[in-house]
Image 1 (cartoon, helix red, strand yellow):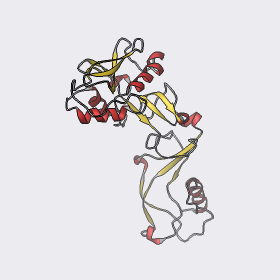
Image 2 (cartoon, helix red, strand yellow):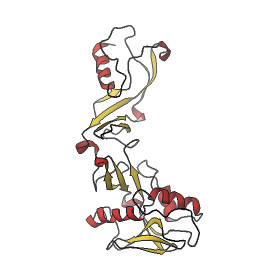
Image 3 (cartoon, rainbow, N blue to C red):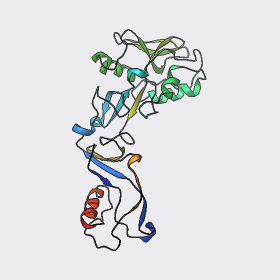
Image 4 (cartoon, helix red, strand yellow):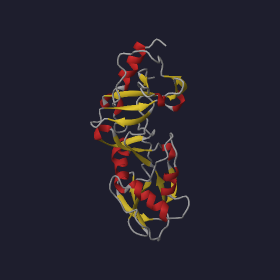
Length: 264
């Protein structure tokens, strides 16, 4: 458990912000740094959504994770074979989420690969989607090829990339070959999600709300379960040394100044 959370309070000068000396809600922050040890996500490690990381950028600050094998579906159609869809043709990394949206919006067929991936809720995350052709290939090369992720190496997996009105791209996880197949074919499905740390779970178990431009540090708020209500800022009228910082990065010192200067 992290012990260096600090109160989300700062010196309040205007009495408009105080009612009988009471602040109505107080939560805590945790400041973290050194992404190489506690913040960066690594290939084949656990991602912020509880999946397995298969692609990272920005020194591990952002990337993609595959949902665990327990969420995998078998015998799912791509769907709407022969239907003219708008979009869903992206193949590059970064296009799977939009492809999934295009499929769900343009195909009314129930229980299809993209719709199941979109509806997945796992580890508190509901932003999963069906991978694009290139995203799916990264899952093969960075996970399945290393024996990581519980993929069925005798199975074929759908991508969200449409080839035509009748065909979509899939991948054989035995040898990594990719080809298109009729959209009515039933294949395996594994959902993925992207992450960039903001609003994801931080190293202290809170919610990340700020990341430094160089990615070396950031701030996370403690979970709602730790929030206090009806707490005073304290020591009204007392002359304190410090606790006047307002910029990002000053809250921790403010908290130290308050605790050291206010005996209440």
